[in-house]
Image (tube, rainbow, N blue to C red; front, side, top):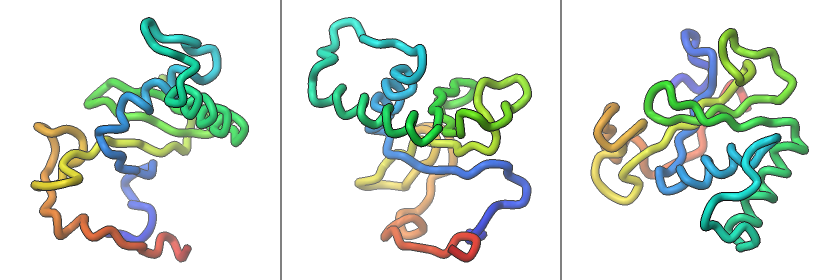
Length: 135
């Protein structure tokens, strides 16, 4: 809508399919001193091997992924060495990762299936490339 940063918002927002929620949660838990195994999970499976590789890429690039449950579950992606947001564990600047619902049909929804504003499909789809801050 703005083709750049929104003046009253201090972060960038990214929408991810709700089907990827568990993957992001595992990815956040696997980083740093996080959980190294999950009860009943085959940590040697291709699923977890892929998540470990993704965690290693994030770590090598200097990023942290935080699960944030202060409102509908979101995630924050920030540089590991960036200054911390006062009272938070994540740094600034950061990217909010929201979950979106109804990718296949119905009104597209950001946040949760029962909360948030439904968007008519023609507003979101077909997806297209847009200029952002001249990029």
